[in-house]
Length: 300
Image (cartoon, rainbow, N blue to C red):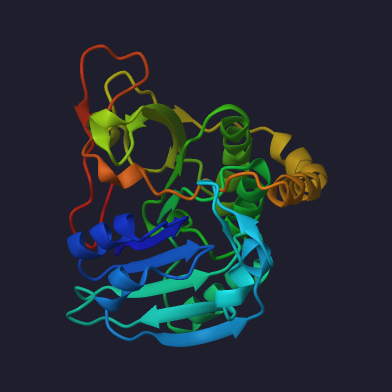
């Protein structure tokens, strides 16, 4: 199936740029609270602005303290939230590119993205990397949007894979609870869930990152791709997510804004894709090669 890739939390586009160079004929969508890195985006040519709407989330704040301690004024240099599109061309390596500059917790960006993709006849997303705001509120909001009809590939649309970086503690529990809901919404009893650890983009100079995987890829393929000792278990049917989605999303949202206004850090670094190796937590046998998709399609 042609790759329909979504990356949430793209930082300076280093991971997206890697995918654009590696793939041909794919659709690559970036979703981030910042405008696209101009140095990287300029290489793709001039985009078409498909939609614009008022600034949201941290983008709309008068002052915001970054994780490095510097205070910035987003509303002084950002004009609005937007959806940009780069059509297939030689500069995009025949990939169709989209960029949503908006708060992931604002449904407006998701709505404009969905409308644009539907108008252009794109298939649902079948490969997703979540590496944006590592708070339960943002992750719960992402999952709500991803489980809307037509967003992710169902059983008749071929394989589907979702990856969550820094998936530990409370976030890991939330992802595990949501896995059954995702499988149910997609009508996919073939999904399995795995957890493993892998280095960030600086490789051996950085500690291992907890990673969660939800995929329909066959165990035979996963056995060659995942770190040794990693088990991808069939998704269990439970109703925990219904409690999370119905009672806790707004609570998570309120807690998120409290910490945001108290200048808590937004962890926006896309570190997952920079390393070519992965290793299971506690595996002393050394790293196992992570098999990356090297074309515009992938299959089970």
